[in-house]
Every structure is written in structure tokens, then in C-alpha cells.
Image (cartoon, rainbow, N blue to C red; front, side):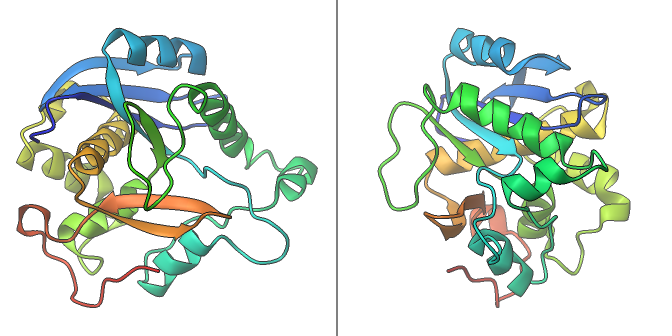
Length: 223
């Protein structure tokens, strides 16, 4: 991690679980907030002069019948995620499942005026926020044949430990996932990421296969 700038990751949860923020400077955890409002998390990012924020939630709703290209591209690599609905579909759902996506929307609404949303191919300014996905990050490190949802607690902590982040300070998998998002923010600043998706549906950013000799399949590609 050579960027030298503070970075942040946010794990988005529903109203009950709440959102989790981890801020890293190098490999040091300098801030870890749980169940705070987006406004409070933004204040902390300003306080620690954060340059990039990775967010584990869709940055765009689906448009029309077609799914988001980012999710399709990951699925082509056998990396699957929840299919983001249209906002209208989410609003009409009675299950409450999409509450976390609305919480994510609020986080982007609060952060984007100050941390512009990542656009692939454009130069990153002083600040940026972007969508990422802890399972896809784990696949980038370990290979999708090895990455396992059942072992995510162990595997994701091991990734952080390998990178020099003291994962024992993180109490829950939500904290761990927020730290993985922050880790990816470091790689974004260093230009060592892969961006899946398009401008219409937004981009999902994950570490590039080449970083730290990651074990990944040779068929990993992106659109």
C-alpha cells in the first residue's frame, strides 16, 4: 500500500444491522464506526482526509428490463451477486429485503457531492467513491474456485492479515467487509484495479489479478 493517503470502506446493512465504516492509513485502522448515519461517516472521512471510499452497495438501480452490465460481467466469471432491481420494483416490494439498497442509496447521495462517483477511464481527482463487492474482492485474491461464502469469515480476515491489516481489531464480518472495501480503495488510488460495468449501470471495482501474486484463473476478464 504505497499511496500514503487515507482510504475508507463502508459495509451497507439494513436498518437493524446498520452501516459499518473502516478507515485505513497504510495498513493501520485509524477509525472504525458502527451503526452511524451517512452524515457522521462523511464527517469522519473529512476528519481523516480520506481520498477514496469503497462502498458495498449498488451505485445504480437497474434501468428497465436489462440487468446491470457490471453484475452480468461478474456472473460471466461465475461471481454472482444479488440482482439489483429497478427503484420502482424495490419500492413496491413488501418483503423489506431491499432496505439495505436504499441505505446504500442514501450513503451515495451524501458522499457523491464530495466524493464523486467513479467513472472508468476518467482521471481520479482529490476524492472519489466507488462500488465494490467483498465476495468479488475475495475471488480476486484467492480465485473463485477457492473463495467460499461459507468460509468468508476466515478467508477475508486472512486476506487482511496478509496485507498487514490487524484484523483482530475487527469485531464482526461487517467490519471485515468494510476493511476489504477500504483495501480496494488503496488499489484504486494505485491504479491496480479492474472495473466491471458501464456508465449507465455503474461500475463495480475490484483489485486487479496481478497485485501481490494473486491466485486467479486466467479467464478473468472484463467488459
